[in-house]
Length: 253
Ligand code: NAP
Image 1 (tube, rainbow, N blue to C red):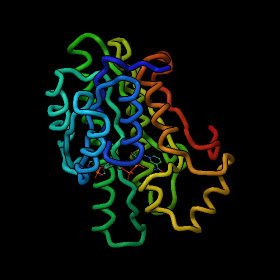
Image 2 (cartoon, helix red, strand yellow; image 1 turned 45 degrees about the vertical axis):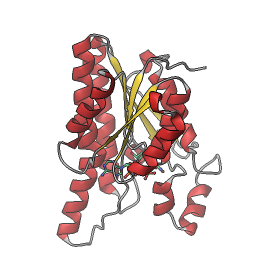
Image 3 (cartoon, helix red, strand yellow; image 1 turned 30 degrees about the vertical axis):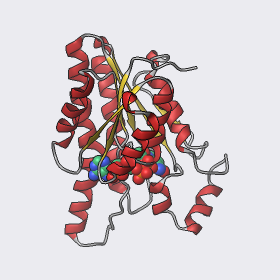
């Protein structure tokens, strides 16, 4: 049984999907969880009502705005004056066409890289400085993607590139700040049963996709959430720098 009692954990993108389930699992293991949302604060509020007011706190930020990660960290830190674990989960999966207008290409790349990589990096930076400053270390868990290793469908090169960047970021943090007690992990899911996958996949796409997954279905958010809880516990500290694949053996490295 994983025990996270006493840990304060910030989960970005906790309103829906993987983030919501992760926050539930972490709270169930005893953590106090800071629930970040953007457009769907009412969903985060519903989760907060479920978890209970003493065990969680709500923060909001649109991470498409450059620098918003810094404000988010300040708001989150103000709740308890400490954060022990950062889970960078918020993300988007929006297509951009190779043969579309230049303006769409530029905007698509800028938005995806800002939300999926730069905002996460800003939060990692704030977390490392906090962990160093208090002298106790801490844990960073970045939700990347199978796309980082395998590449993605043609309209998602920016998504794959941002997720690959996230893994490079994670490895660097693990190597640079392990001496300060900072642990950094990445998690790389294949398709997971959330709004993101449902919005992106037609019925035909879904059937074709499932045919490529030896376990015969998409992963569930709980597959990722349970992995995050384990990594957050510090029970596998010497795995720092590693990326955990969760893809039903559809891409075995
Ligand atoms: P989801 O169900 O679409 O939820 C996305 C979350 O990100 C929501 O909580 C959303 O907040 C937040 N978010 C979206 N735009 C944002 C913005 N501009 N600023 C701040 N937050 C924003 O996605 P998911 O499937 O749970 O994915 C979670 C993470 O796992 C993402 O990083 C994704 O890339 C990764 N992942 C997912 C899959 C998959 O198949 N589902 C596979 C591999 C990796 P609001 O609802 O409040 O707007």
